[in-house]
Length: 160
Figure 1 (cartoon, rainbow, N blue to C red):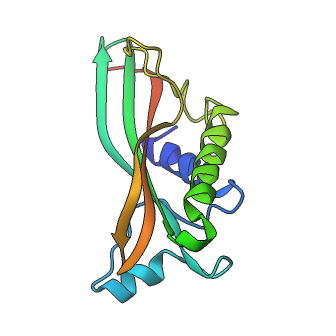
Figure 2 (tube, rainbow, N blue to C red):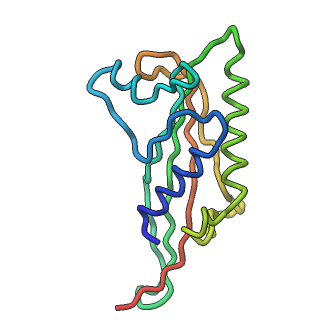
């Protein structure tokens, strides 16, 4: 499987989460705030509610002529309109837990990777990690925002 197939598997898994909103396999940009808001607008929810996936690092180790371990680090970023009167922070937090559950259900992402565990982690870190969550301005809208991290590991058989 290619790294593009891994990206697709991550976006597909994220899209499968109930009420997740709009999911982009890459970070979408707009030339202005209105366009940015439109890209992440969920008509079903009538609010900004969207995600994107970005690979931010890849590390490869091992013997290039034999077994090589590839670790790709992925960032999943989500936003959802903030509505204090309806306690939307609780809904967003519940959404984050559904995302975590979806990824822990199959650590191979449908066979595209060997595992979603960092074998070098001293703490046995696996599946989705929530690095940061809190209020953000996004597309001119006050939102809840979250940055999640996923490490995928593939054991590659390199031949010269």
